[in-house]
Image (cartoon, rainbow, N blue to C red; front, side, top):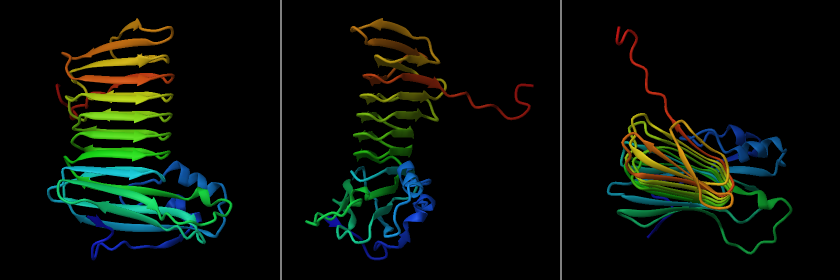
Length: 286
């Protein structure tokens, strides 16, 4: 089943001048992508606009959500309510007849949210290829999530179930609890903060050429493996072995050891960091 927009939840569209793109907040998540901010600075002609679409549905019983956006960024947050809500900001030339759309497919436990432009045969004018859609989504806490982008940022913050994120050339940024995690990008960088509680799930972070940085909460018990040809940096004790002409494998035992967490990059640097322990209230221990 395809839900384009339920009543009340009908998308609200607003045509905004392109010059305001960097100031558009996407409502729930801000700021907009760096690419969008660069668009303003590059002097996009006045015949470009931003279409803003807002919609939402009840999400009671939702267990897994797949979000696909090959046209820009995806930012996801969790919240306590059993609702799925999204805001899209689409940038295109005003004469381009290929309108943007965000469609929710499926019902019940598993659903898919997809951003796209209409597939019409239209002779593109110069510059039309700069069109993009940036998507902000909130989901109920505990939902399993899969994010797929092409060149855009994939970002998730909150308490999720199993989480997967894939991007062709975009960065991946996470600040999450829950898991397990599987993250992959070809040329983007990966930055992940696992916590704030002790991490206790397996995770995999892989970039072909980008750097990978993973931060753990204090008192985490995990077995961490770092594999690549770049620099290996750590706040923990690390044993390193050579497993190829230039490739090294580092192993770190965090706390008592536990679930396997793997970081890999063919040419990027790999780093694992420990979050500072929270400071106690003033006067504690005196």
